[in-house]
Length: 247
Image 1 (cartoon, rainbow, N blue to C red):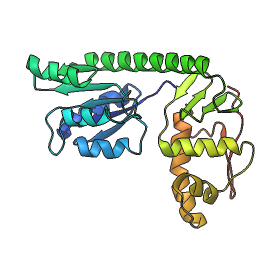
Image 2: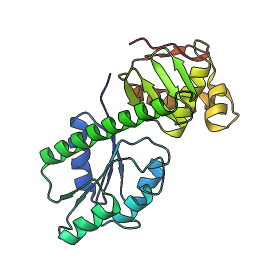
Image 3: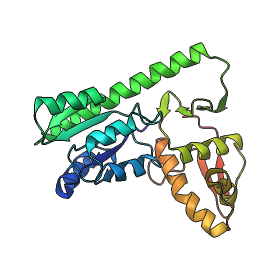
């Protein structure tokens, strides 16, 4: 299973942001980027993110404000949040930690230190998610679950598990995998998918254009490499089919 994660880098310094993105991408992470808090929230509304790295001083919405907003949202509150800032006073660090930041790195940052921090926070987050999931399963054994081979979809908790790995999905990706799972081993057309995921009725061309990147994104989330179809098969000229994953 691919152990990749999606990180969001939020910084108004374009050159530093590029350096961070290159460093993180070279380490095997998928990286999204934003120049301020408002842009970051727009991304978080549609993308599933495993960890946020943010500057403090940014125009429009600063890092403190962004952190405060993420801690208000149930689907964002558990995302590890790291600050990386040139504001180095102890009072800045204390304030960030009081708001709920997981760590505060002072600029200039040693990239090896950053990578170690990212790996540690991601490992802790995954272990905590797994413990919480097992605890919830023990306390609520009758909750509604869709099982397709080794793919398990917990509908009430909006959680997807493939084998023993918890998969982070956006709202749209979750709708897609649920629809495919409910129609496992059955070919569904892009138009049917778009009606379910986007509440949109459209022609075959537009539906295909909307669904194609969504399918690619879901395959990546499930751990398949670029070019691999995995458990979501293409049926040329017709649509897509979810087959029970066995590996």
